[in-house]
Image (tube, rainbow over all chains, first blue to last red; front, side):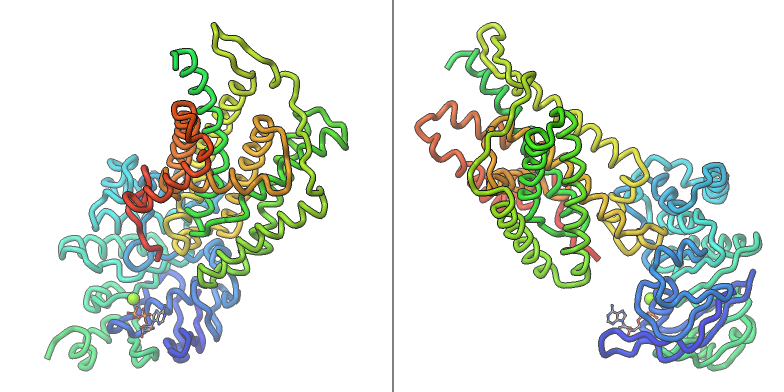
Length: 234
Length: 297
Ligand SMILES: Nc1ncnc2c1ncn2[C@@H]1O[C@H](COP(=O)(O)OP(=O)(O)O)[C@@H](O)[C@H]1O
Ligand SMILES: [Mg+2]
């Protein structure tokens, strides 16, 4: 579904992505793991058109490089940004409606709202509260719900478990798995490599702007080097 | 000073204050969204006045139609200024946009001078706004009542737009986080353009009513009300539309009351606003309703 080829990103003089190539097949969870500063966030931003990129990014054979962000989103790419970035001064309901901003079919939007509230009952209880008053875990659920409100073909998540208590981390990963089982394609970025590889069908390892390893989730989980560097085992 | 005089001055204060409020909205909305102080805003207001003037005197429109056309054209002017002057600088350092705003301000004033001429023109007062009223001893002109009524209706429409419509929701979202708003599939440029359109329309309405109060118009007429409306926006807390309204009303009221109660300093009338600005910047830089300063990500 998503095919990324030879992607380069420069920040001024910094060569943040040095020609990476990977793909995300329909209906799968693919994860990109790597240390802090490896270029994971940059990769997602390039796909969304938030940073200038060279190379090719195709969604169902349509080239995304060079398109403005709002068009890319309207084509079916949705992102849960790093640090959640909910709109603190908008209510929970408004945050969710922002996610559906470009959709015109009200009935479908209503239907998705019901689905999100089923998925995250906490959000329903707090629908009229300002998003800034939610706890970290609730904000993560809201950011995820907001991204789903656009009915994306491809859902991308940037470190959804960052800063959450272990119990919540498990909950988040369960939700991700559940959403995938309902048929959604997911590109997941994580520093929490173990949890990510456990639910991913396929994974790539990113090191300072290059992809150095790839394999199925379980292959990478069992790889000696991955175990040593990313899973903290000796 | 008697009770009747006080009522009279209060009416004047509300009337003047509602004009400041209308013009202040444009400063505060644009600042809230792109962190730009649009120094050309007062001059946009001036253009609005001239358009209404020519509508009546050259094109012989009924004044209501002429006002509406002028407000519409002024909002187009606001959008053109954004598209032509500020949009190319969206990614440039903030100071570049600020200097450009000053340049646009001079441009509009100079164009006004060339096209409209430097000689002040007498703005026609519609008869319904030009009636002297004697309300139990309180002498006021009918426009003193109409101005706050019209301003109030416009401000209510604005609140409805910002808080109850989809595009208003996007405006509030853009104001806190532009990048994330674009991730919602929102065309940021369009939202900013609409903000300029709304702010400029309110400035035109404010300008026209200003010309009803002070019926002499000239190409530099936007400078002082523009500055004062800007001060009102800072006073109320720049970026906050309720702050702009509150700041506008308070500033108008303070100005009128100070002059009324202390006639010997009436000559310093304009200095009052600047004194307020200095005091606000010293003691409460975020203004009355402003949130603590948050650097935008
Ligand atoms: N806005 C920016 N300007 C300059 N350099 C940046 C910027 N954002 C990220 N970088 C650099 O690009 C590299 C990759 O960063 P990032 O994609 O955020 O990594 P990750 O998400 O894997 O932690 C890092 O070296 C980082 O310092
Ligand atoms: Mg990151």
